[in-house]
Length: 262
Ligand SMILES: NC(=O)c1ccc[n+]([C@@H]2O[C@H](COP(=O)([O-])OP(=O)(O)OC[C@H]3O[C@@H](n4cnc5c(N)ncnc54)[C@H](OP(=O)(O)O)[C@@H]3O)[C@@H](O)[C@H]2O)c1
Image (cartoon, rainbow, N blue to C red; front, side, top):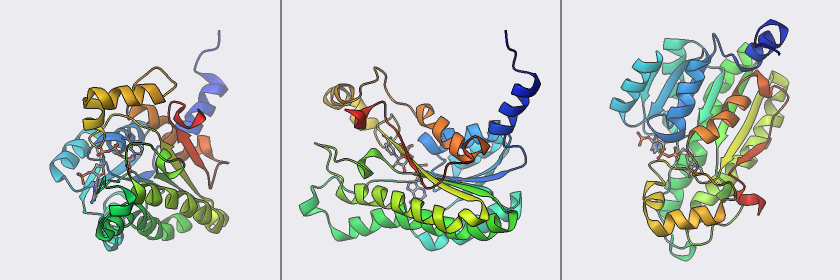
């Protein structure tokens, strides 16, 4: 029987270990971002956790030995100060995970107020780009870096019954941004990818899972017979953030229990 030691064990540690690396994870006060921050820290990274709710960030940072950076990313101009806080306290960031995101309206497309459209784009698309711009000089100087954006299957397919036009546009935009940054920054060995989750239970989807109709809709449309959870998406993020994904760049990886395979 093969054990976990020896050459294979060393290779596994090289692929998935993140010892000595500094990571910035947005949206880390709950849901997927919090789960990603915990896992990156467990793999050895020093993690700056970013969101608005400082109490939650402080508790998480205490638990994982990281740094809490409270910031409202609906103003993308604040990205620079987030990255400088992380770099100043932890060192130059080599990993950026853009998991913060939200929906501001569930109006049908024809009625979406334009200010909600702009707010959605600012938080879900402009802030990730501004953060990528701010980490770029650090990654270029290090000669390596990884950026993982979190989009959604609604950036790929329409979702009947849950109107989300501007949210879908913002998430589709992340895939275009990802391919372009990947090509521009490949020469610096900076990889840029996106993970596009299907539905999983979190604060944002709590009410949907909580209603009988919503839960039945999700069950009916998800081929895998399980309810999605943040941990179901973390593996793809960690793979792309670390050396296990070293030859992958510019891609959008769908993690959706089979939703888009139907
Ligand atoms: N759950 C799903 O089914 C699903 C499916 C596809 C994609 N996604 C995407 O996955 C990502 C994580 O979502 P989640 O499901 O884990 O939801 P969640 O639990 O609601 O987490 C959203 C995170 O974003 C942060 N955030 C929201 N507005 C912010 C702002 N203005 N400035 C800074 N941080 C802000 C929140 O923190 P604060 O409130 O403390 O600021 C929170 O940490 C999002 O990008 C979401 O679009 C989720």
